[in-house]
Length: 94
Image 1 (cartoon, rainbow, N blue to C red):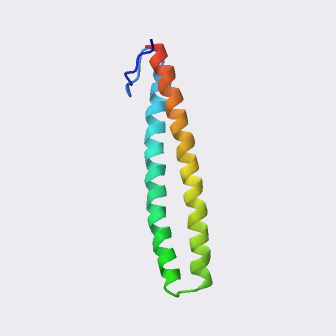
Image 2: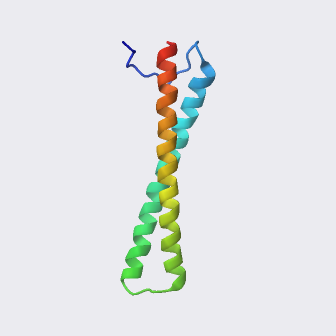
Image 3: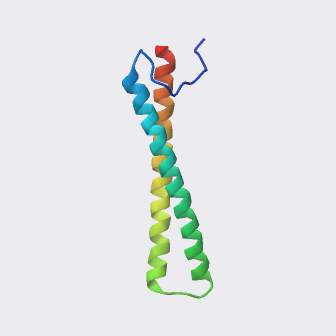
């Protein structure tokens, strides 16, 4: 039965993978935070547009923030998958 305990500390088996996992987790958190911040900005811009500020620049900004938010969210999902894979490799090495 595989060990379900996860460790964020480097192991003797493969410290490079453990370091990569730690860095990847940090990057995942930073991207998630950026996506959340962008989501708030997007909501504010949408609200301003709904109130009648139909400036073409604001409309482009809303569209752009939506696209960037989607890309950040997809990237975060990919980073999370990599984190899980690295954790599985480390668990099997222990």
